[in-house]
Image (tube, rainbow, N blue to C red; front, side, top):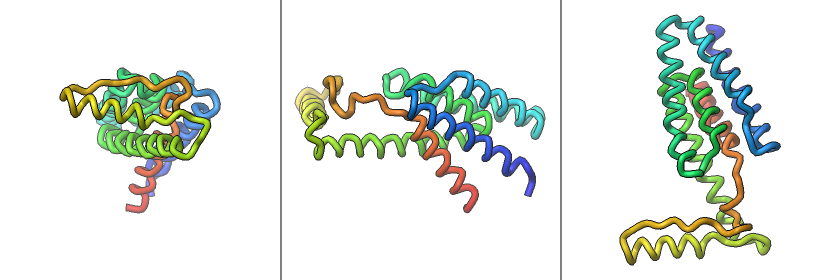
Length: 180
């Protein structure tokens, strides 16, 4: 087995799990971590694959950036999450970072549903279900979607460390590729 077949996934895992731990503890991802990851990805791909590697790494960076950018613009993810996925793209390339991002979004959705479901069983949190019902009723009656922001203390109003979803989704992709 060639060394880059282990080196690149190892670097990706180091990057994403470092970011996930940092995000869990501090609720932010340091720029130095994602910038170092992106720089290593660009340099490594350039060394291993030459100019084709540079093109793939820049394309991967762009795909990683663009796929999470709407979530950032809508306030659902932080800028660090977007930059982390872009850095992952420098190592994985455009196709694999696209799949990793979709897996990460799926994992994030499952976790968010878990948070919402937990409100049904917790007396200490405000349930989002009445707010969701109001948005759905308004859509059904007027045909126009509206957004009602979460109340202070509502479970869905809490900041979620999305780097955990990125780490789980990307790890899932790497494991699937390894065994597939």
